[in-house]
Amino acid sequence: MFKIGVFSKINRITVKTLRHYDEIGLLKPCFVDETTGYRYYSADQMPRLHRILALRQIGFSLNEIMAALEQDIDAGTMIKYLEGKQAEVARTIQSERAKLAQIVSYIDFLKQEECNMSYNIILKELPEVIVASMRTVIPNYDAFNTIYPKMGKYMMEQKCRCAVPEYCFTIYHDGEYRESDIDVEICQAVVEAGKDSDSVKFKKIDGVETAACVLHKGPYSTIGRAYGAAMKWIEDNNYEIAGPPRESYLDGIWNKEDPEEWLTEVQIPVKRVG
Image (tube, rainbow, N blue to C red; front, side, top):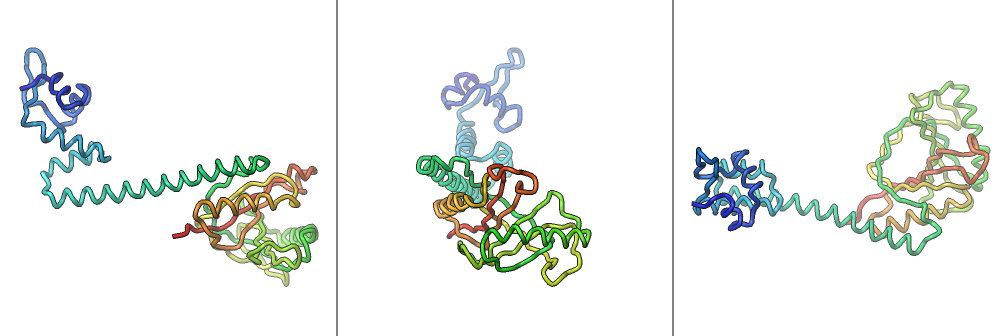
């Protein structure tokens, strides 16, 4: 028999860990001196300890190890245990690789686009919403200044209640950047549908599982920088565009006089490639 200190040195495991294994019933000493309280272990216990250590090293929790050892499982069942852990580790590796790719992309972006350091791309879900919608083709982006007041007036007449938090956004249906004849859909999230008119329709817009989102602070004339940053991130991180982009308006001419203080979130539905 070996005293606990000697047993710990032979097996490269701390005395504290052996005491913890004893307390939880995972590996009890073969003998405890009632007078001194010293714990003793035998060579016959080493195979069990080595199995415990092997399972710990590949990521099994102590509860999982106890369950496996208490059932005295055969080789076939142990293989199933290990295959489950293998799949779990593979998923973790895939997730960490995705994070690593994002880190590398972000580093490259900061190095190459120092002037755009404020553009941080995140992935998030866009909720399902009921909206008051006005879809039209506008001659240019300045036309927004006439569309929004017209839509707002109709909503006030209908006493529409906006959703909380407020979500006002534009969907671009062209699928590409255009400077004229732009197919847009102006949307304001509401609590419930109202009465349709010739130009304003109420509808439900499905949620988006994953969208690459980036905040743009400043006038709409420079929002192309945010789109450029988002598109580069999407390409670098093995995503592809999965739907028409949106612009969600957080601060604008209605509450900020200085265009440099306007805040817009560009939201691009995406899906992973492969």
